[in-house]
Each structure stands twice: as C-alpha cells, then as structure tokens.
Amino acid sequence: MIRFRQTLIVAIIFLLCSVSVMKNAAVAACDEPLSKAMESTGANFEQGSFYSWVKLSNKQLDNAELESIVQQVMSQLGIDSQDYQLIHQQQKQQVSVKAEVTNKDFHVMVMAKAIPSQTQKSEREGYLVLNIEQKVEENFQERQMRTQILHIIENFGPMPQISTCLIGWLDGKLMDGECRETLTRAFMVIDATIIDRLDAGNFSSYTGFTPNVTDWLQVGDKKINLNIAIRYSQYDNRTYVTIASPIITQEY
Image (cartoon, rainbow, N blue to C red; front, side, top):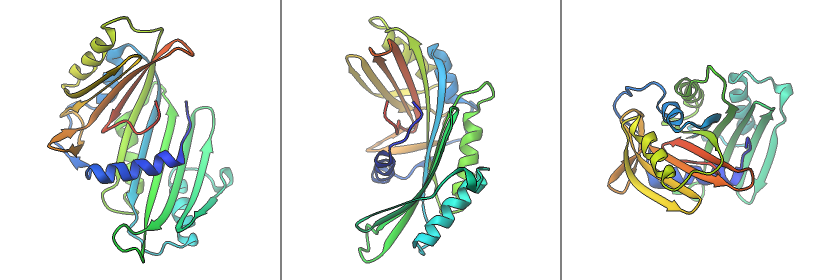
C-alpha cells in the first residue's frame, strides 16, 4: 500500500487551495486523536501517511533553485544524497524536481514544482511537496511526526499545510450495521461530530469535526477536520479503515 501518485499529489494542493486555507482551532485535549479513533475500531494499525505542502516564498524558480530546495529537505530528513536521484520533469510551462526513497518500511517523496501563476500568467509560482508513508511501530506518534514535517517545510514558505492519514484493516467483512457502529464509535471516542455521511455498498465515508484536532478546513458554512472511511476488499477479504485529518488525500 506504500506508494504515491504524482498527479494525485498535485491535485491535492489545488483541492485544498480551492476549499480554504487550513486554520487553527483550540489546543487539542487528546495527544493522538487519530490513533485513538483507529484503536476504537479494533483494526490492525498498519500505516501512517503525511501529505504536506507549502507555497514557496522564493521567486527564483529555475532548475538549480528547485534542486537546492529538494536537496535541503532530504538532508533535513537525514537522507544522504547517495541514497536518491534527482528526477527532472518538464511539461509545457511546468517544471519539477523530485527525489524519492523507498524501502520495506517507509516511502519518502520530496518535490519542488514551478507552474504558471494563477494571477499573473507571465510569472511563475512554486510549491514544495513533502510526503512520507511509513509502517506503524509501537512508538509511532502522529502529532510528533506532524510537528517535525511542518518544522521542515515552514522554512520555505508561510502557512504550510499537512494532511495526516492512518490506515488499518479488519479481517473479513463487517456485518449489516457493524460499519455504521464502527464509524460512529470512532467519532465518539475523540468527541467528534458527524457532519456528512456517504454509504455505498462496500464503502462508507464520514466527515466531521473534533476539537481534539488543531487544524480545520472551512467548507461552505461548516468546519471539518476529520474524515473516516471503511472499504471492504473482496480481493483479500479485508475491511480497510482509513482515518484522516482534515480529509483523506490518498487513494483508498
């Protein structure tokens, strides 16, 4: 399950931009709210994913600068330059430099991208994307990981954004009513309010708001910062549980 889709990553940036800037709420009362919600489902906690990005302050967005940004981030992550290659891509007026490292326990992807400005077509604007997927160990701490990632990317631009996504699974298929009960319980244990529900056969997705998560998105007249989905896979006879804040930003 540890993999990335570059087109999905870019789409996430513009999705979050078009919805609203992520905002701060009150200080959280629960240190690890998403992990607590996952534990309540009884799922085998498998993977933690962190999808983050920031609009670059630097306007010098030539290849050399994009390379430098990627190299700086990889260095701050403790990844040696010998362990990755820089991948250059250019499509029309879009230019990007990317580096990836993958092993059996984690996947790191860093990309610096320059695209035509949304307001001034004669200019370019840049984005830094840092995504980490890792298998969960006993000492996994979602809040600590978020803080470390934000600390890295905030050096390159103001108001960095991050989406946390936890993945687990249950053996077999949930019986009638069990899916709704599981989702409702996951919301209740972290004092979350369900705002919207989607139930469709082998798939259900609930969105809502909890004061135990510090960031939120404004969608219409509502604030959301929690998205939990359950999907049954007939292929491996497992029910996958995906818990994210503020929204799920990966394929599931």
